[in-house]
Length: 544
Image (tube, rainbow, N blue to C red; front, side):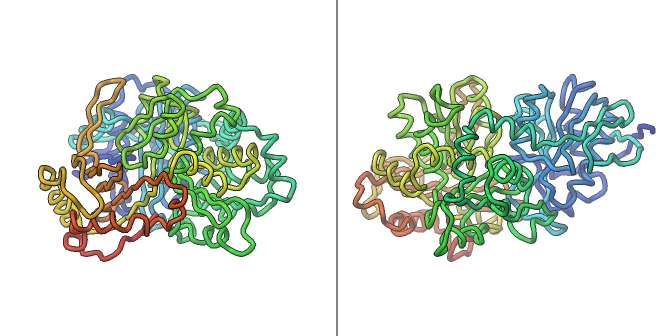
């Protein structure tokens, strides 16, 4: 084996987004493209020689090839040890847990999360730091700076490592350990939740659940936890085999892309509980029989019931939510007497709060929830948390949510996604809305009066760093909100997200259909932003 130095040229499109670098598979397959970015990671990190890294991905197309390239480059760059997931599979939450458990220097996660996979799909790569969380902006900016000036990279000339069996190998001077990533994650979950209680509920036969892994990374984890450990019947986990193209589906756990699960839960003989997770296992959707739990409500219910769960009986130090997430959890925090922090979208913004013990539970409206047990969103953790609440309370999912609304009021909430729209039109729409900031305040729209209009900025309470331009907020005097934000997770064109929220304390008015309850706000959003004019779309791609 010998280390070779390869001459290369910089690419101008390797700026990491909210969750790393995501592009079409064909972009990553260009000569030197992946290698340039990986070398830029290594070149931007100090003191990495001899350190331990964690490596794996969501199993999508190009995952295995990329892992072999990264292993050989890691060896050539002096990394001491790499822990890589069996079969190249490693969920994002499990990666965070393994980084933390092994006190690794960091990790490289290969995923485009909820984006489609396959040869014509997307691929992604991101770097996580030693706390197990996504690299903060100062790290991703340093990586991006390196990509702009790179002229060469180092790689070991050697045969591939066998990823299909647990074992230890040498790659040059570097140790490679192929590990079963399911077991340490299962043990972590067992430390947080009452597995005896859950086993009693799931194995008796009078409580049925359906877990849809969408042919993505959580299949092996879900089978090991729900069927093998907790005694749920065989077949509880559906679409449980990870496939390179996710079975031709879209691994995004929402009402549109997880329709087969929704159909099961809204059928005549529906099970009591349903859940789905996404491509890399960090998102979740929760369903009861004939009932969908909005992710913002899910965060609020988890927070309100945390004292019922083993790992959180001692109470919460605080909670945090992304800015577009509804204010439902704010009301719970107020009653509990703890702080609720509002951050930009992106899990990395929760890291400092969790590390400083300012927050215990965090969540985003984009189907992501987790706690201080790791530094990533955690889909199966959220599923187990809900099951634990159901088991303790002995109530249905629907009754638990309706009881919550009765106590705290209901935040009617919806997100309208316009996917793969022309970037130029989306940017023009944002500019148009921003141009109205000064005139919107105090303006009347039907029953709504604008209280403020701004572009959200965030000052980190721990390190004082400032993040600007994180989404347009239009707030009304009754605490209703409309938010416009361009997403950074897609790879084609732009995704415009419109968030709508209205608070209803009257129990007698809480049964309205969400889109009906938000109807006036939907019309106001169109009037202010001129969505049809700028992006030429009559209806959203996805409504959640």
